[in-house]
Every structure is written in C-alpha cells, then in structure tokens.
Length: 159
Image (cartoon, rainbow, N blue to C red; front, side):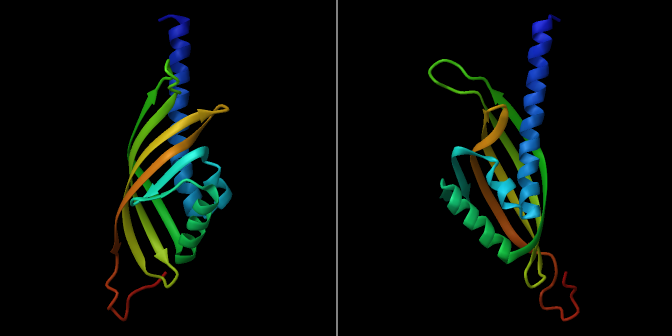
C-alpha cells in the first residue's frame, strides 16, 4: 500500500469518526439542554426539519429547543443503526459532504413526571467547514410518544 493511499484512508477514517461524533454530540447537547452547544453544530445555511416543520433561522431553532426543554424536564437519546457515507467534492461546485442515516430512541420525562418513549429517524447532510463537520440539513421523523406507565394507576411512580 502506498503512503498516499494510507494517508487518504487515515483521513477518511478521521472524517468518519468526526461525523459520528457530531451525531452523538447532537444528542448529548439535547440531553444536557445546552443551547450553545446545540446551535453551534449547525452550518450557517442549515435546514432543520422536525416532522415536516422546517426551520432555517438559528434564533427560531433556539427558541423551539428552549420551548421543548420547558415541556420535557429530562431526555436521554440513544442513537443507533448509524450509517455514514462520505461524498467527495468535485467539479460543478459540489462540495465535500457526508450523508448520515440513524435511528434514535429517546426516553423523556415531562414536567409532571410522566415517562414516555419517542422513536426518531434522522436523515442528515453534514458539511466540513474549517476542519469541523456541521449539520447542513437535518430531517427528523418521530413516532410516539409512547407512555411507559399506566397513567390511570394511582400508585404509579413519577420521576
């Protein structure tokens, strides 16, 4: 194997790891309710689609996240079934980017203590800017919420 080929493979593996870390950081910023960390993950020209509702303005995205955190006291996102494809840049103005597909289970605890499970399918396009990967497009389709306890049970535990 040539040194050039080995260098290219190492760079590709580093990019794949960086994209995977960006996906994980997205979940962690939501769980930590860290607005700055959440917003800094997005490219300057991004599109964020949640069940068909699309946001392209950073301030509006921040307000939407903050409203959600008022409703959900705690979340734990578990990411899985992740695939990442790196797409090289090329002629005709196409830039290097990554396409990621993943699934997520989110355990949520509402302000009144109710626990629910939400499923999500993430479809992402990330771009490499200044050495880091940022979301250019995130499409989320969710299922649920699914109650984890019988809400009519007077002895149910609240968290």
